[in-house]
Length: 79
Image (cartoon, rainbow, N blue to C red; front, side):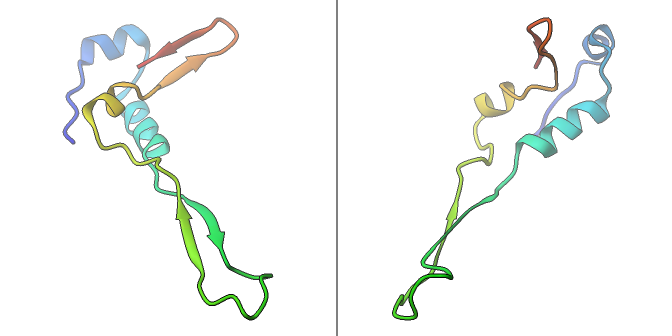
């Protein structure tokens, strides 16, 4: 996915391109949700399965909804 930044809009919001990159790296992860059939399951357990969450971004809409900065006290956020 190629992302085009608007430098003037970033400046208005007090953001940098590094802020955007950090938000992308933080919110576009593939993480293991755990496993099924791993220890301490009985020795008769034949299989072990890894469980992954659906956390990778794949559609344009997913990338549009990344929150770069938020201020929970005031209820504000920036995309």
